[in-house]
Length: 452
Image (cartoon, rainbow, N blue to C red; front, side, top):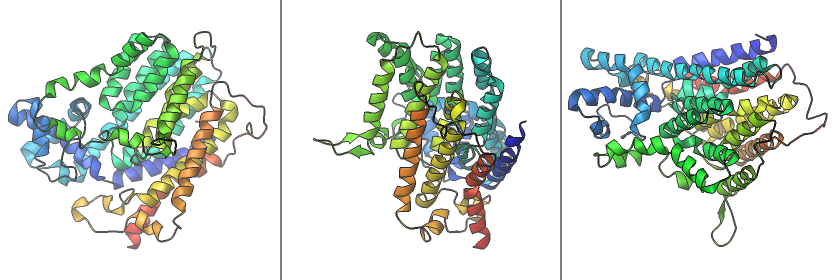
């Protein structure tokens, strides 16, 4: 390991492990119980179609009354959690009330993240002949991805299953770079079926590769094929529609219309304006003769994600979808590595600060281990709100948006500059400081719990 990566790796590793073992977030409890419900429902009813009805009974009085997403995403995690069903069903050890089952459940998410090395290694092999020092660059991608604040927040803190959509999309992308289009479509469709957050990236890739409008529509339809097929068995299933209306993608259009500018007659969505401009630019790109084929594909896959998180307000752990595509994109511009890292650190730090101020659930000390011994500790947001001025909200949001816009600009395939400031060498302190900034929510939460 390069020495400059050792200290940030140790800091981030300690942060991840402490966060993993200390926090039992409410979403993790619900997701773990629902994966166990897969087996419980089959055991009791012998009919997988009653999964949503069975879960809606909410036997363990979860904070989430209903399952909020389609069935397919729960199958791999349910297989991993099969031992938890055994000890819950036959040894009266409910996962919802104990720490060990939930920690076991979180291990699956970490393992899924570890499996991302497979597509990343494939990408490394594909680019080996066309990119200098590819092994070192992929190692940096892995390190930045592993130490990202969003990785710690999604996997170690919140225990979210977004990694289930990220892994198949990375597999799809590796096959795309290799020119194996059929495998790309299958893996991309699986990712969209699990959670449709990569759909904007998928459409951008199709627009880059295909210029015939009918073929574009056909290939976009292929991307949604598994998403709709998984719904067929649950048509008219009791509590199915009601459950999905309870989930994270419900009301998604409203989220995409949150940021607007005042254009008559009714205002215009900044997200759709920006995404539409990006799609048009990608569509008119002359892709086939381009030497930097991998860069164009990576930019087309990453830019819609950046725009999505610039102009929508999702949960604090959801920008995990940027990992590791954002760092793959940065890999292609090593001459701007310092500026890219600065912009990523500042933008992530600002978004982190915004959520710490605004979200009472974010790194709440009440989620530290024993939920059964719930005490009403002050939230981190409540603690900070008393000490920081109100304009901090808009200041952090503006800074985050500006930094992400600059990342979009300097990583565009056609952007080139000989500016000496842009090409400055990366300082040795930058990576360790990045890791320490990302450890701040954990330290704040633990400090409040100890002090109070």
